[in-house]
Length: 141
Image 1 (cartoon, rainbow, N blue to C red):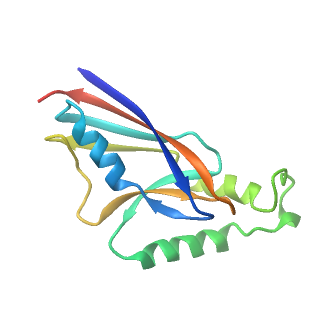
Image 2 (image 1 turned 180 degrees about the vertical axis):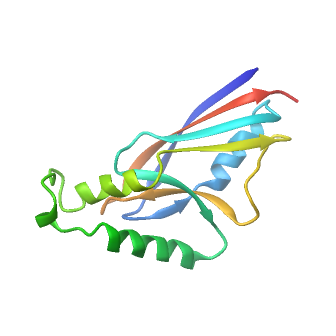
């Protein structure tokens, strides 16, 4: 059994849904693990991760618009506004999405579907540097 782990620092734009598939896949392919499971974990409470269609940018636009409708930025709705009107909505959006993903690996490659990509969702109204932990566990080839 082999284990490989790294940290990625990813800069985000405000409320960006940023595809990170290439960075994650490139790292996984460089490891000496041919069959295994990749875990991706984000170390933040106001950003999240998602596997979603990566062919049409309209999907990202519609996802962002949906989250904005479901979790509006309205300080009258929330007690927690320590860091501004986007603070608590960002926490709720993170709760509704995911902070960890698991992706199988075969022949050293991620087994994502044809139209699937890995995305980091920035829920805050300002840019951030987010830290994502990649852990790949499996057998060498």
